[in-house]
Image (cartoon, rainbow, N blue to C red; front, side, top):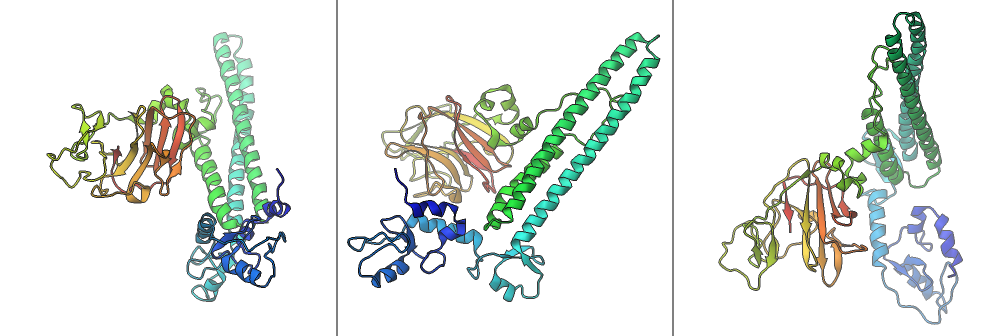
Length: 450
């Protein structure tokens, strides 16, 4: 398959340049695509063609037999709006190229001329990179100090070897024990040195990437999203979780055990690192508490029939008009809530959906609207996935996300980490990940939702 040469060149163009119309040289307004694949403002391309006898592409010069019909590219327009919301000033709609050190916030040129006129303003790239470089240097310095402490401890162990020689004649048993402890201490010191050296190499690599980012055209997004996560992860998981600060004394404090590898600590503390293997081993039970979910009949739609033990639900052949209408009952949508309520901690439960072709599954706030038509999406208090006969499996993310799996799940595991704002769904039989909502703002207790 051949690729248009101009299109290939666009791959090397900075991100924000791809959002600019080559005619007006401004960010797209009502972007539209023409048959050759290039994008322009609707008004710009129409005005350009009005000056030509035959319509052609302003970029690749491809000519068209007749003037193509133009429509707004809605998908591209949404992407542009998202880009504007993170890279443009909300008040003046100008690029965020400056940083106000007085208010500690990014600003545009217009802001520096008005609201922030008498504040201290610096280029945003220099401020962000300087802070990150300083943080990395401090972390490298701390680890080098720790290496010096370990080297000093190793020197002390050599002195202890002389003591071992002095008592060999009359204390054979003690000598043997001390020798074992000495070897263990040296082995531990070597392991710690190796781990610290590896961390220094990784931090130095991050420093190189920061230098490369000085040439980047999009520091706001890359620095805030990518490097904040990298630095927080290195600082909190590796420095705090691993006991570097414990005094290292190979002779006076012999019981030194092999530390847990860093990647195991990350798996233990982050739901996003759960694998299929984690979901079925003994270690998993220490992460999440299993919940014996029961259905709440007070919330059940009149179309639903609950089993006596409140463990199963099915759609009846006709609506039960004898049930009392309560503020918590779904009166239009065929739904039901779980009896249990969660406001903290980690929970999981497994639901057998079988071959059913029409179901919803997830969690919802206690205060959700249950009357009339409801919108199942996070901004309405729902975090769920659903299956429909017509559209298959989807995440109700608003807009919905199509979930393409190799096999349709028969049993679905729901994993809730309330404090971290995470809701994950797994195929409990295939032990594969289905979908995860992250960064959720729950605000109030949650119930299982069906």
